[in-house]
Length: 53
Image (cartoon, rainbow, N blue to C red; front, side):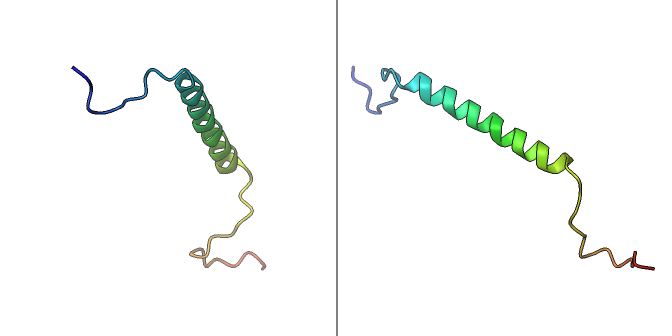
């Protein structure tokens, strides 16, 4: 019986697509972690304290 839906498991490039997807996801996590742990140079608009005095 034939499958009514093509799942794409017989394509040899599927392995490369999965590997590239995982690496891209990990790179995105790394960039987000780098940006969130970096120095906080932006001021919070909700912070109304004046540090100039």
